[in-house]
Image 1: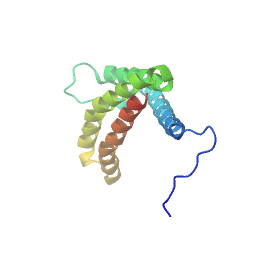
Image 2 (image 1 turned 135 degrees about the vertical axis):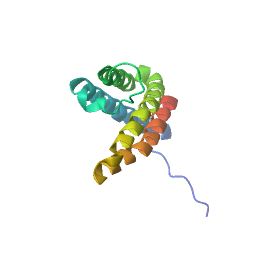
Image 3 (image 1 turned 30 degrees about the vertical axis):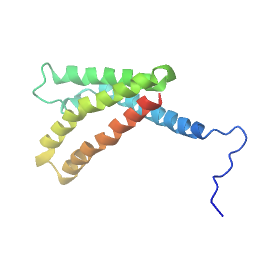
Image 4 (image 1 turned 90 degrees about the horizontal axis):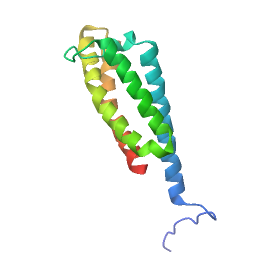
Length: 140
């Protein structure tokens, strides 16, 4: 006897579960970005060490600017009408801050083993953030 797909409950839409998962992903990422943005604005000194020295201007300006960008992108992800653009903006933001993570790992190379491990683990974690943001952009 051939296997059959399970019957859906009346009114159930298989895309509904996917859209709820996509919405949850966007909300989680939006809240996380807003939270990180607030941290950048409240404690910019904690983020200044991430700023590559090769960038023009002060590390404080970059830390504050990235906080504003994270708040803006996070807000875009939280609003359904701007979620598609927010997903693209989030992917660009995650690519843009990747050099900061590389800088942090490079500067930690002589630090404690735990600090080195944490900074190195952050580097590949950018990949799922970028792909998740692109998925949000596709789902809208």
